[in-house]
Every structure is written in structure tokens, then in C-alpha cells.
Image 1: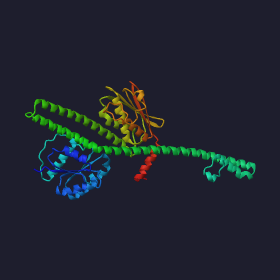
Image 2: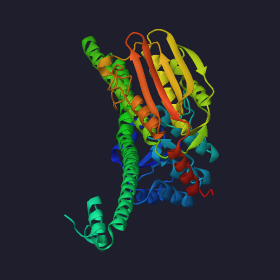
Image 3: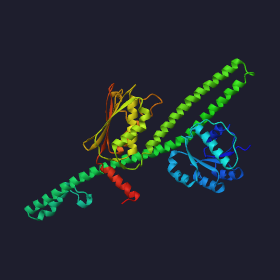
Image 4: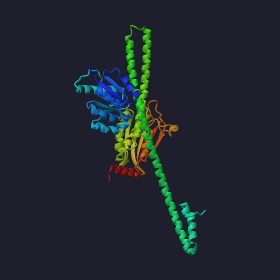
Length: 145
Length: 326
């Protein structure tokens, strides 16, 4: 049964590795890519329902990356990972619908897991694919930090 | 000694006198004396003007240095905060993963009853318990670092705020509300607000100042005590006095309390950034900050904010101009 797919893009390998460890028992498929251009090529073959990307990356920043993603696959949930300093730059992007939400580094691990599952659930339901029911405790729906 | 006026570019009183004396040597004595007197007076006037201009320049220079230092500090702390956030993120994630993996290991050990001896089981469980404690303590440490970074960011973000007119009593009430959860169990609040005019400043930063002082006051009190907040107008300043009936500040450390990262709180409770931030914010208002304290009796912090604040008025005019107001 299809359980969804999440793509993680960050130029810091240790961050990607830590996310991979954190989510290793989750039921959904996961892709971890360091280079946003490579990620853009990858999603053609393996379209994810949710993409989490860092903001500050060399070559292509998070917003530029998501602008390209939006053109290719407008339905995908676009979530940006950022330090607080970038707030001013990101607000207009949220208003325009370029990104759906931002998560502030450092994110609480529990909140991170919850938000990912929730976003995936929403996406799969919207596409008419029910995800497998999971037991979740009624924790706060936190926006990181 | 007497160089030409052109050469030196700036004549000393002696040179001027000599030059005048030389030029007028053909004229009669009375006229010459008058001429000399006039020139002397001119020189005195210029000298006085020079003194004033020099002092103003020196002041402006000092203000510029202070401003630049603050701006530099702000930039630095933002940079540092940002740099720390990445490794902070993956360490936090990794510690959480570690907790999960230890849990899985524990379950594995529980299920391996048939394959392992009791002694081995015990050994494994003990090791896992030890690992859990280590992880737990590390999470604690990471949370503290996160707090410090958050404080740093708050400090840095005070750098270009908007100047506004505000009411100090309302500001204090707001700050009390914000600090309430942290202080309610320890203090009875006594308020004595005088009639105070509206002030020009950075009200959000003043919130920070008061929250800091209120929380410090509450923490200084063991058990239960009084937090007294008084306002008055005196000598062109609005004064806010925050007093507590806490343990007081020992004489020995009184000159260090404003140092960044100085804290008397037990390990894990204070970041030591509070009073340093308070001082910086008061400085930004061109205000005054004093305190008096007696061990065993309590402490009183006094903040003076200018009623007429020409430097901030100038800054406000500049801000308005930059925003396109006329």
C-alpha cells in the first residue's frame, strides 16, 4: 500500500543524516538530496507529496528551488527550513503561496515528525489516497523551535 | 616662531598679534592699539568657538563609536546564532534518534529472554539505563544552548527597531503581564505610579528591560516577598524604580553585575545576559541606570528615561524622512 514519499533537500550532509536517522522507522518513502538542482531532476522520476528544503544553499536558495518545484508539480507541499533571521525574506513567499510553511531551526524532533506525518496525510487524502491510520498522541502542532 | 599665516594654516594668538603689529607699524600708536585689541578679541572669540565645536565633535564621535559597536555586535550575534543553529538541529535530532534506538534495544532485550541468561539480561538493561541517563542529560544541555542562542537573537534584533511615543505605566503593566507566569508564585506586586508624560523610545525593548528586572527580583526572593514598582518625574527624567525584598547583591560582585555572561544563578538557570541587555537598551534611550542593594534587605534598580530627548527626536525625524514622510 502506497504510504507517500517525502523529499529532503539540504546542503549539510550531517543534517540530512540526522533526519534520516530520526525517520528511519517511518512508513513513508524518503529521499535525501544535497543538491537542489539534482533534486529538481529527481522529482520528475520520483514525485514526492511533501518537500522539505533548507533556505540557505549555494547555487540555488530554498525560494528559487521551490519556485522551480511549483512550476513542475504545483500540488506538492513545500516546506522551508530556516533560521529566524530569514523571516523577513520568507514572509512574502508564504503570502504568495510559494511556500506553505516554514520551520525554524532548531526544530523539536517530535514536532518535526508530527508535522511531516500530518502534511503527508493531508496530501494523500487530497489525492484520494488514504494513508494507513497511525496512532498519534495529541501533542501540540508546533511550528518548530 | 612667527611663521607666515599662510604656511601654518592656523595662526596662534601670538602670530596674529605679531602680524598685526608688523603690518600696522607705519600707522600711529593709537590706531595700532585699537587694531590690536580688535584682533585679540576676534582671536578669543574664535578660540571659544573652537572649544565648543571640538567638544561637539568629540561627543558625536563617541556616539558614533557606540552606535557602530552596537551594530557590529548585533551583526556578530546574528551570525553566531545562525552558525550554531545548524549543528544544534542535527544534535537535537540525533539525541532523539538515540532515545528511540535505545527503546528498540530495550524491547529487543526484553524479547530475548529465551536466548540470554538472567545475568546477561541484567547487564544489558543496566547499560541501556545508563545510556538513557546520558542522553537525557545531553538533551538538557542542548536545550540550554538553544535558550542562549534565542537570547542572543533577541539581543541582536534590538538593533533597528522603530522609535515610538509610549506611556511608561502601560508599558510596565504589559511587562508585568508578560512576566507574570514566572513571578506570580513568589511576589506580591505593589505599584505606585506617578503622573508621567509620554516618552520617546523603543517600547518593546523597554518591555524586555522590565521583564528582566521583574524576573531577577522574583528570583532573588526566597519563598515569598514584595516587588515594588514606582514611577516619578525628577530632573527632566521619568524614573522607574523596581525594588525587591530579596537577598540583595553582595558588595563584592556589585561592579560585575552588568558584565555579559556574569550570573549568580546556579548552573543551568541563568544565561547572564539579562542585565547586560538591560544596560544596552537603557543606553540606547540615552537614559540612566542605577541600583542600590543591601545584603539581606533587598535591591532597587532605577531607570531614568529622558522626557525631552533631542538625540532620539533627531533619529525619529531621520526615520520618518527615510520612510517618505515629510
